Length: 343
Image (cartoon, rainbow, N blue to C red; front, side):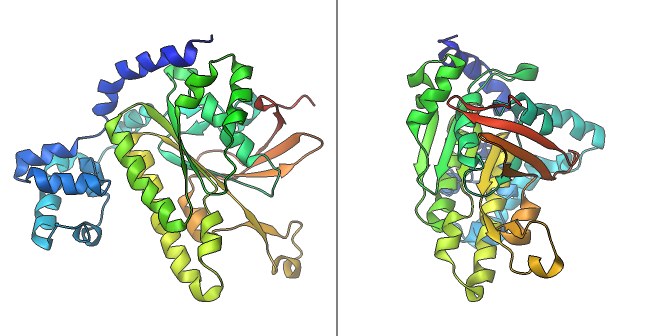
């Protein structure tokens, strides 16, 4: 099994043709009268596919240097012609399209079962909890399990890790790699790491991520942000800046969702908790709640709450999901990452 991660890269390359057909290259715009220089400007702004043009507002396109309002209208018109009637699908057609969705194992069968198979692609999965509930440990475990072949023909792939709290530890990946008996260097080489220092920097990194996913179609399978709200708590303070913070957060989450759908990758984010001063007035059992407000609550496809159990055990509960029942699962944290609880 030692060469498993290395060998799988060949399988990923073989699948690139299938993945390329998943999205339409922005270079197609040349056939509709858009010049190469303008297409290059779009790529530099992180817009690399026809769907990316569709996902970008006219206002945002006009902010790109060198793209005038007239050029923007021409680009939007060309993209609409290419997409055509495919904007609407029957439920049966969309069901067929959903078959491209894959799920990445968390390392714990019980947790996978709770999540309906694992962390889903084309979606944002958010886990939140207090400190020491296993959020970062789960993030590190996913860096390795994403690279392992899985159920329903999943071949494995690379990972992008955006770290906002300086908690990423490569040595932790080596311990987890030992559990799966895979090569240390191969595992570390397949994780692309970036440290974000401000909320603006965090957003800017997503343009680089989109460009990377475009350059290597089908190679990257997971985008991890640990944690999504840490820098927003630092950059924005008090109720006076709350509206601005929530607007910037909404833009970031919208970009994450679009990247997940555009390139068929799983997006996994962690979140912190805060004390709710109003909870004591309503006699709630737990006066803590996840930060980010309704913006984050609505943007996350699946929300999972983590809490401490006995010893190394942790309890995960489905907090919100469009298709998963509200349920709980127990897992444990070990030297080899996230595992099933022995209890």
